[in-house]
Length: 202
Image 1 (cartoon, helix red, strand yellow):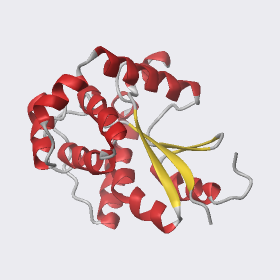
Image 2 (cartoon, rainbow, N blue to C red):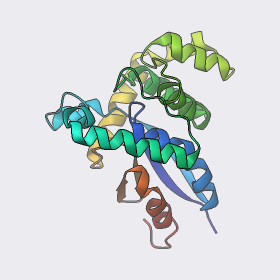
Image 3 (cartoon, one colour):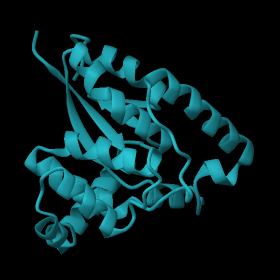
Image 4 (cartoon, one colour):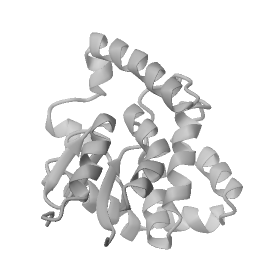
């Protein structure tokens, strides 16, 4: 059977994207579905809805539920979880680097590592020092990547990526797109993979 593709839209500040990033390669591989990793920014999309902060901060009851839910999910997936001392952290720099990693084919290695730094180690992924340490650990040239990440063309690419997310109707992360179908949330990953296996997917 020919492999089908699933777009994985994620934001580095997103708690549920952390869980999804840790398991998506395993479950997608089992379903014979290829992954298209797509980092983007939720901030501009939230701003269009009139939000200046995460809804998990704006609505305390929702936030309390989310953190307890994350504890359950991470326990089930055997994932470490340390509630970040700052939430949400700015994922702009990490997303710019992720776009470069996508183009060069190592994004599947980078992305879960950045998520672990934020949600398992409470490291500040908004600063270059943290991202540089991650890149060095992955055997990458951090100095060269820094220059590329801040290049105007890459900044424009991330802006365009976020605009593309909005055009697809994406309003939260993680989101999964199969053909013209949108699935939102870590708990919809299996449904998205099942859809990708349908013979009539565009």
